[in-house]
Each structure stands twice: as structure tokens, then as C-alpha cells.
Amino acid sequence: MIDTPYYLIDTEKLRRNLEIVDSVRSRSGARVLLALKCFATWSVFDVMNGYMDGTTSSSLFEARLGHEMFGGETHAYSVAFSDDDFAHAVTFADKVIFNSLDQLRRFAPRSARLPLGLRLNPGNSSSEFDLADPARPFSRLGEVDPARIAEAAGLVSGYMIHNNCENADFAQFDRLLSQAEAIFGRFFHDASWISLGGGIHFTGDGYPLEAFCARLKAFAETYRVQVYLEPGEAVVTDAASLEVSVLDTVFNGRDIAVIDASAEAHMLDLLIYRQEAEIRPGPGIAAGEREYVVAGRSCLAGDVFGAVRVARPLEVGDRLSIRDAAGYTMVKKNWFNGLQMPSIVRQEEDGSERLIRRFDYQDFVAGHS
Image 1 (cartoon, rainbow, N blue to C red):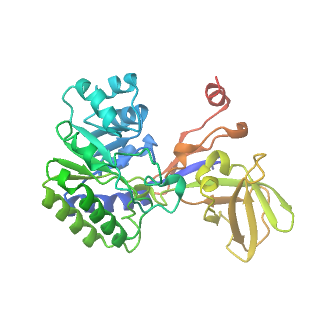
Image 2 (image 1 turned 45 degrees about the vertical axis):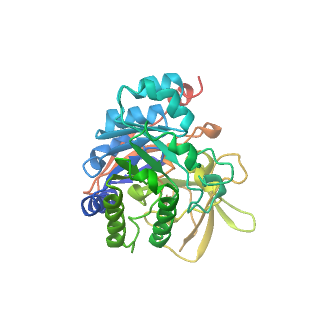
Image 3 (image 1 turned 30 degrees about the horizontal axis):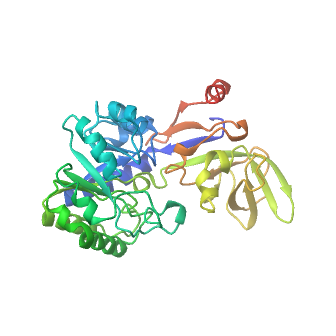
């Protein structure tokens, strides 16, 4: 048995998501790129790259990782390229997408004739979190003024819009896309490709895939463009968990189980967005009515994952499974409090588990040099 804590990537569940992705590709004609800002665990890229067309990035390191480890198309985007970043990106990127017209003008002469794109901001989104809303007031993410965008027409071959965030509502997606067309549609007619970004939860249960694919196909035919999608969470939803063990139990008005991981260090989005994780009892523990708050071992008072209900009192050594630990989780893990970094484990489709990487003290030292 592998020592906890570790991230357990379930390749069977991952493949189920990927089969939906592949179906959308074939039915809609869209090309699908993995958003590395959400998930960059390259040890399962061999499972993923047969179902997707490549990767999209938010930094030079992500772009290089996609090019070297995933293959297919490599789209390089950054909120702001430095001179050095851009000089390296053009050596392997298939497309470069700029966040602003000023960056486009600055770097276009050095683009080595690569296809260039510009990010557009339609001023609306599906985000319920101000922190993550690309259309929030005074947002720096993309150009908003059609008059300025018109100045880019001769420099770009395509555009990128990213204003869906955890959007599982097809009607809302359709509405947002129609609004973007009303604002920017005149530019789309002169483009050869349009990226609609990520944040569309089309792998979720009950999502109307037929309507979604038809909308994408109609959009592509209207403007005669290649449509791109850039999913992250949709590809890896519930495809990984954080496996942990109970180190102690205390009582202070409620039963509390202290585990060998930390929300601050290992599932940071829970704290950032004030959410609770789905936590399931591990082997030998039945679900029941006794509730425990599951808390991390760091010194942060609010280091809490959520709650779990079990049929018997928890004991030291009991295991728990914290669900949906892939998207925006593994890419944000850190060494807060010097806590043990979770290992990375791959569960094959026959049920066997394979240790991919175990982090140790030397990794901690290297990360703080």
C-alpha cells in the first residue's frame, strides 16, 4: 500500500471524459486543446493526447511542456510576454495569441510568420466569482473596444474569447456566444480560426451534447473558421483524488479529524473560493451519520477541507478520499509549512496503482533555494 498523502489519477475515469471530448471533436469539427493552466500532470499525457489536438498555455513553461510532452498543436498565450519569453516561444509554438493590441504590435515583426491571434473581451462571462471573472470591471484580459480591434485586422489570423467559467448551462453558453458575435462578428468573417476558450462543462452528466455540437458547427460554417475549444476541468473532472490518512482526532464542539495533508498546501482552491470538498470514507469505513470536520495539519486555523460522515468513530491510520483533485489542484500544490508534498500515483484501468513520483526533503530544499 502506497503511503499517503498522494494524488491518485484514475485513468479509467479520465478516459471516460476524453471519449466525450473526442465525440465533440468528430461531431462538431472543433479542435480541442488541453488548458495546461488547469492540469499539467504529464505522466498521463500518453492517455490524453490520442483524444485531443494539442495544448494551450498561459506561460512559456506551459507552452514548452505542451510542445515537448503532449505534442500536437501548441498555442502560446500570455497576459504579457517578455522579450525573452517571446523569443523562446516562437521557436516551437504553432500559434501565438496576444492579450493586447500593444503586445501584438510590439512582437508581430518578430513572429517568424507564425499565425497570430488576439484575445477579445466581450464584457460578460459566466463566472460567479469576482476573483476569476475575466469580464470584471477594469479587467486586463483582452481587448474590448471594436475600434481598437479593427487596427489588428491585418496582423492576426484569428481571435480567442474566454468568458466561460465552470459553465454547465448550454443555454448560457449559447447566449454568451451570441452576445460575442453581436459585438465582434464583423471581425470573425475575416479570420481563419476562433478559439472559444475553456470553462464549458460539456463532459458533465446530462449536458446536451447534440445541441452543443450543432452550435459549434453552425458557428464555424457562418464565419468559415476553424473553431478551437480549450477545456481544462471538463477533461479531468473527478478523474483524480487526494488520498489521505487520519493523524489525530479532537473535539471542540464538533468531531474533528486531522489528516496528513493541507488545504492551503494541497487543495488551495478550496480556500480561495471558500468551497468544501467532497470527502468519502476509505477502505473499511462505511458511510454513516457521525460527522467529522476534516482539517489539515498546517498551523493555519482555517485549514479545513470540509466534512465526512461515517458509521463509526475515526481512528488514527484510517484513510479518506478527497474527490475531484485534478483541475486547478495539482498545478497549485505548494510547500506551505514544509509539509510533505503528496506523491503522484496513477491507477491503471485494471485497478493496479503505480507510483509515478514521490517528493522528498531535497525537493523542498530545491524549491526554496
